[in-house]
Image 1 (tube, rainbow, N blue to C red):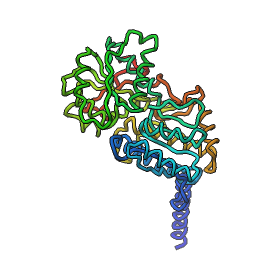
Image 2: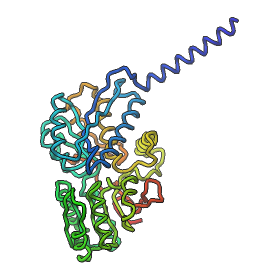
Image 3: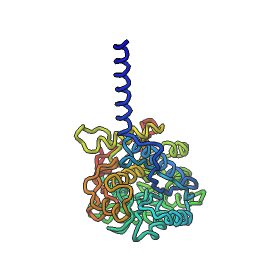
Length: 397
């Protein structure tokens, strides 16, 4: 009996040790969480983008809380719906500002993000979950991924090296469309691209149901490539118009549109060659010593737990900003002020994210540049519906 009692005591001790180890790496559900407010389009034309980003933040929340939270405090991303309307985004941010947050995330589109940025010139930190924004260097507004000029530039390089030099553009007539045109023109202004020209510029409203007239002009222009960079349902309208008039050239679009669910809804009128730009996480062939290997592996595992077999760009657009903010809070504590979080981000020089190594010391509020970008081709038979068709920087494979 004494021997049996000792065995039971040993098992009880092992159970207590296991419980203690678990408690050391995960946080208590009874602890009040640190809430990070997020404004995203969960309804309206940008809903596909917002839902992907909300999914990524949900996965990140679980990952962070499994790995200790913020020094023992759980984190919670509180997502509200801006309905893809700048006025609603501004109203939501005004309400959030009354609670004096240190940081806010959102939105997924330029129009909402630009409208909100005007409210926070001196804080709190606003981290936009769209790359289609050019925040003031050193300011309190940051923007995910590389900037749109670089995301576009990698495609211009790719097409130029394939001998395709005549570009047509089809964009919306809002802030996103204006930013996209400026980004394309900035890429074409680089010396290497001097022989690449825009032969036709067409615009349409986000609410338009047809762009057949604009597509007919593009066809007549002799364009060898179409940059159709509207997001969500606007992208679908663009593709339908190009299909209706029989345009059969490569189409380049925003990486945000490379969602299998979104592309599947447009499958009857997808072009033969649909391309977009992508970041480092699309390349999973990495050595153990690569600083990006663990962040990318964690990203895939966390999204897989949420039923996302292969993450896409919009997931990464939200994951990296959320992870960067969490690391700032782990370093500074949950009482950190906006000024401290801003300073923490600004001094990051080699922060490993899933989209690449972030460096904010170069006066770019994105923290990434063209060097880590890839060109992707849509392929419904491949994992994630995409294939990498270029080397880093856009040189064709």
